[in-house]
Length: 333
Ligand code: KG4
Ligand code: ZN
Image 1 (cartoon, helix red, strand yellow):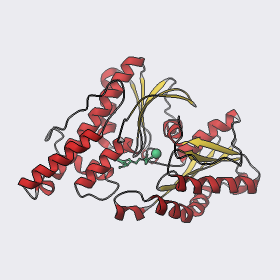
Image 2 (cartoon, rainbow, N blue to C red):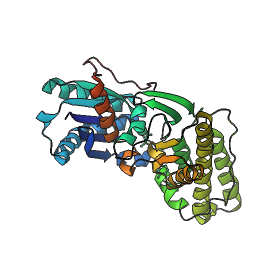
Image 3 (cartoon, rainbow, N blue to C red):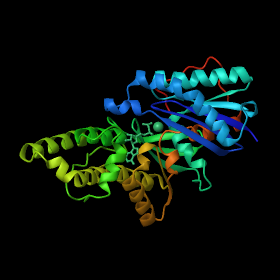
């Protein structure tokens, strides 16, 4: 019954989790509100707040799981990709804990972990499956052949889907991170009110920078004519933007599923918390007779539960890291 302590600190959430025999018993997430004032994550501030949060987060994760620190068999941590200073805090903590307790270290790829979040609950996809991983930094269609055998078959050429959400919300004057606010307003608006262009990108790749520019010009031109345009139409604007982002994502996912003949379709990453994307994916799967897998909300955005489950499967394979391991800002799948 291996007991894994897991640490996630790749961006602006400090998270710790305890997993016993493949069951995630706690998932503590300390959000950093300090970035709201800046309209985006400030890397240097993020690493300082990780330093303040990491010990209390680990203490809480152990307490909630009712596990003593002496019972931990291995420490899993996010090695990358992410902000180097933020990663450094988690990696250093994991190394120190492992050294003090004389237990092994397990390095985890954050993007693989988003996909492996599907193995936390009871409803697990079967290999091979397709996973659309959509976050603030990544937009990928991943062909998942096994726990650690994943192929990126499509990805964004510029902005990530979450970035498109966050940049749109910034244009609309909403605070960071804007994705959840776009979601909230979109529920009250008409998704067909405004038409934004769908980029024509070959294969299963994505592009969101053109959409961002068209939203910017659309808002600028309308505000020039009607100064209160945003306030009067915020729900319709959010619903229409969300609708376009979701259709861009799902049109590619649908084509990839048909191309690879895959019937198990999964969503992962922070943007999979989006109501429109969740409903749209479910509807697409129902129409095509595909099985749809969407993680619980707490395992969509950055969390250590997904690092713990990835760590557990590496523990079973006996794949451990050395004390000389360093974080990586970029880390391929
Ligand atoms: O995976 P994540 O927590 O962090 C990264 O690794 O980037 O994803 C964060 C992204 C942000 O862009 C945020 O705006 C977006 O996920 N997001 C949402 C929602 N919740 C989070 N976007 C749309 N609707 C949501 N409900
Ligand atoms: Zn993430």
